[in-house]
Image 1: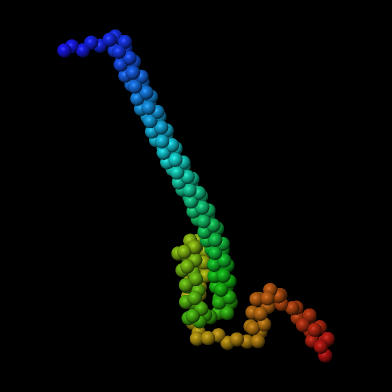
Image 2: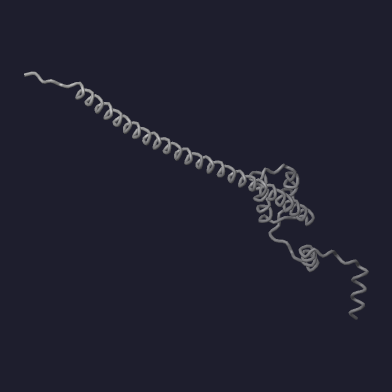
Amino acid sequence: MEVQVSPTYLISIVATSTVLASVFGAILGLFGQVWLEKIKHKHKKEDRKEDKNNQLEIDLAVTIQSILDAIDDITVGLNGLYYDKLLYLANRYIDEGCITIKELKDFDDMHRTYQNRLNGNGFLDGESSKLHELPRVKSKPCTKEKIELLLREIMGVGRTKPSEEKAASEVQK
């Protein structure tokens, strides 16, 4: 038995299959576009995240550098303060002509910190040597004049002239 297929039927099958193939191709193409857009969106999101991380790294580097600069400024300031204090102490002990063991130890500790931690320039090495040559005493007597001189020095008041002292004592009489 032979089946007769009419040309119209064949054309309708071909047309239907072509339409179906076209619809199927369009659907695949649409899904492909959606999938491609999702991938693009994912890459854009990753790029934004990477850009944000890069900006955070840059901000962190800038912050760290500003902290390091501040530490350098503080170190320079401390260097000056240590130098001034060590020079003052050395001159004071040399003027007194003697030094206690505790004063010498404290001076040496400060001088070592100044040299090792604050990159001291070595200008105080001579004063340190002079202090090590001074006679050691257990304690230093404290006279009224010495107390008055130290108080004036701490308060920033200069010494009065002998004529002013004499005039002040006559006014009190």
